Length: 591
Image (cartoon, rainbow, N blue to C red; front, side, top):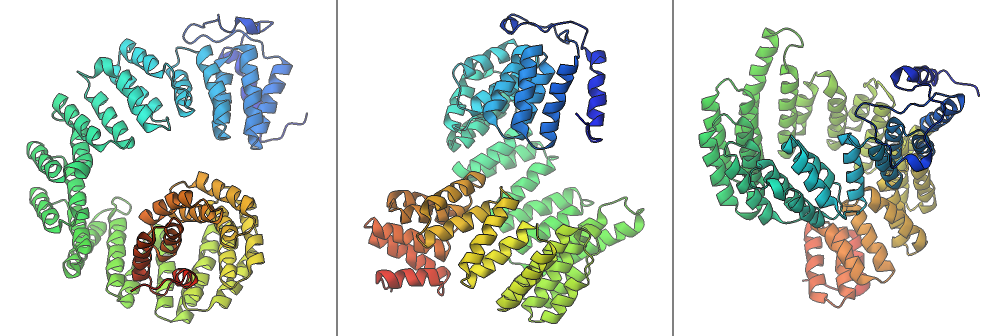
């Protein structure tokens, strides 16, 4: 077997194994001895590094290098069982996880834990994978024993949380954790915080808040408890949560992070004056904390108080520029801070429809990490102003540093042409880019979507299939092709497979949920369609989704609900052709 240069370092490492604990023992232990052997901590099995053993290790590692993780893991797991060496089982576990084969990873983790039962990482991996695969029998008892016997009970609780968090059934996870921490629940604030987080994940916000208060009762100074009381309390008892956060801050005035979290949450609730008052108090306490100027500007911008926001941002920029001049190059974050302020000024200018000012601010950004983003954004704004030659010239002046930037430039140019109604030029741009960079799925995807808009369905489908070949994890490509099949009511079995894959990759994506719902509608599973379409509409109340959701309701004999959804969709987008054609087809007129 010829060994490539890339494998040579691995061969040299393997040659050193005898010095790492591999001894000149002639024969590995028989398989039936596996259950009875228990190595002392730090002890490794006495196994000679024979040519056959070295060959098997090399074969596994070469398989991993070629992306054949299942073959690599199987080979290493077999070696671990033959040699009783936990390092090989650990390596098999790592290969299985790289290949996302959880069933094989569970086998390897169990072997690793059996061969090295005193290794907490091995035991935790085994338990975590058992939990993730739904094998929870005895899990609570095992975790409770580990916590009870641990010298560091807080660490044991944290490990238990990590294991339980892998469980897909969050309510069952809460039940398991409840039993696991029962022995320390009267003394451990961490146990209550863990229960709070697990209850929240299980959809029990009241329990989450109660556990947070119990944690604070055991540890009144706990910042973690205070943060959870604010976060979880805003869902259940917002006034009380805000009040109790102020009380905590009165006793712990130095907790800037919690103060800023409260500012953020007040702003999110539209309580702008209260957020600004808190920021004013913080600035008086720490007048040298110039970052608060930026935060105050953000709150004013969210409130639509653009004059105040711009004044604060310009003051902030002046201060940061002075800092930059007074400090050695690279000694401060002043340049990045100035860029952040200018980006917020860009947002404000765009909201005020002052695109020329937005361009001016973008042009002033000179930080190297943001220069590419700023120039491409400038080009987009020139396109919105209708100055296509200037937009093109701005993009042409960019010197891309890699293929990714080349791709973004071409996608941006195509987007500018499309926004200007010049779809043919957008298509020509992407076709030229696809010829120059034929292995870039992003270009093929955008080109396919444009061709679909032009009614060139066959070309679109060919491109989507090629995107999937190039990037098997591109959920959007599966979704686009699957939806097209469903919408045209053809290739429905293939549409199902495509949409199932898209849903696996991105289960909460509202566009994918809409596609799955529309597929189920096409198969006349109207109740199933309703479930997915409602989930999509809750996240994305767009006219297209409203058209689909309304039609599912219509088929389920719920005309009033359908009319209400359709009316909402028309209000959001009066010219949406999908919705208008749905109403025409069903003979529905709305007031």
